[in-house]
Amino acid sequence: MEKRGHHITRKTFQRLLVGITALACMLLLLGSGTFQSRETHILVLQDELSPGSPISVILVIPTPHPPQYKAGDMLPLQGLLSSSEKRPIQKAPFFYTDQIQLAGQDYILAMAILVVPNTYEEKTVHLDVQFEKTASIASSFFAGLNLPQTHNFPVSPRSFNSETIALGPENTDIKTKPDPQKNKEAAELWKLLTSTDAGLFNTAGFTAPVDSPRRTSYFGDRRVYQYTDGSSERSIHGGIDFGVPRGTPVRASAPGLVRMARFRIVTGNTVIIQHAPGLYSLYYHMDSLSVKEGDLVQTGTELGKSGSTGLSTGPHLHWEFRIQGEFADPDLMIQAAPLDKERIISKITEKLGKTDRSTEGR
Image 1 (cartoon, helix red, strand yellow):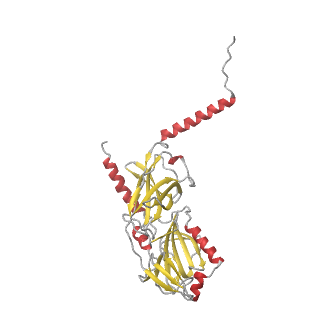
Image 2 (cartoon, rainbow, N blue to C red):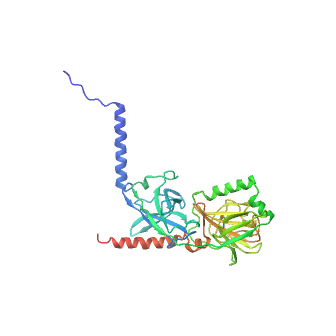
Image 3 (tube, rainbow, N blue to C red):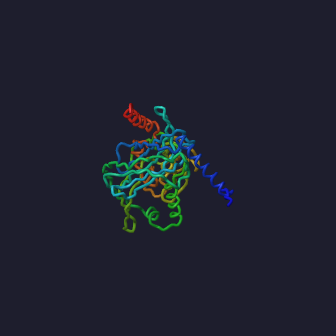
């Protein structure tokens, strides 16, 4: 009997070719270090945390071939803040910050900005880093990345002032009268403040927007609004009120992109500046505006003049920060300087320097 030969069909050959090509690509990537397991270092810039504290989470990622990202580009990683009982508090995406070289090793720096809510009462917070599947940038660069384990941080307790504010007829109407336009403006504001659009505009600290030290309200004040009909409502003050005369120049607290510059029913003439993905400074109740949406501003750029527009009982400037939609203490934003690149690199150098020394001779 004649033996039949083994014939490979065209379809089978194509499948084999695809498999061989995929294997060759994987071997090439493994040889280049793309898929090799890489240990990621984590650094939290702030030494002490309390309600209202910003949290700068820095990932120091070793890389054989630094990818081409721009400062502020979104990365497929996210930081998650949770309570001691693992109750979710906040999450924030990581964004590309810079590239550094230490001891002949290249690293990229990724940052996420979070904040301890001013209502937080527990003694610790937990921080986790995870891959974010829905991020706009996903590449083989992140394959094989060993993410850091859960980190726990103590949170110091904090007390806040209490105040009662009696509102006249006009301000009572602003607070209590149903208004579709007011609802629309509130929705637009929340959408903006919870957005994490790409763009890093500030890599230094923050400064106060006016020179006056006089304050009429403080961050986290527990307020009671008394209305003309005898009813009342509780509220938390999310910023600092500077008691300055009408017409005082209001200046940008840091470089950034003007995302809002318009009149709003509740906050009057308003400016909102993006400094980093998910991080905004806000300026309320101004008499006039000197910037428009889309403007790039620097530290000290005049945004307008202070006033008493919107829900206001007298001339003042309301200054506020939001991180992923949550209030952050302006004083702590100045003290902590969560975006200060020089401070970040200094701490990284210190940490990685110690790591290098501890592994010498192994």
